[in-house]
Image 1 (cartoon, rainbow, N blue to C red):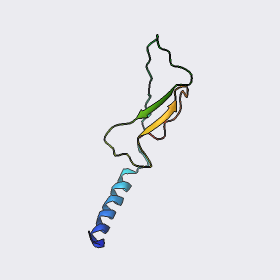
Image 2: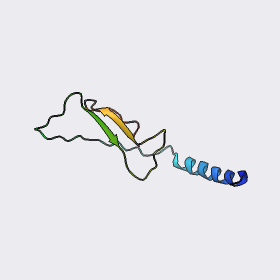
Image 3: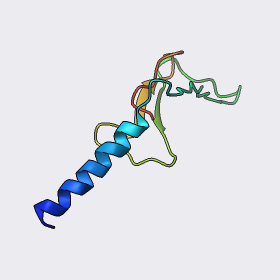
Image 4: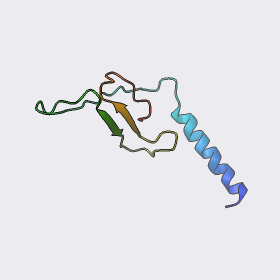
Length: 81
């Protein structure tokens, strides 16, 4: 693809990104709950590896998975979309 054809594509992507960033963007807080049978209590040193899924494409900067110690109640999962 020639350089002249790439420029309009880059401009279109930049416009789309600018349209997506708004001052009044809605941020949803979601709770992730770990369920375990009462007969099998979760040990204090348990570790969870969480994978996000949805209508998005993971990137190297936002890989859509994160590991966390189960005892970290209320921790923010910043790597998940």
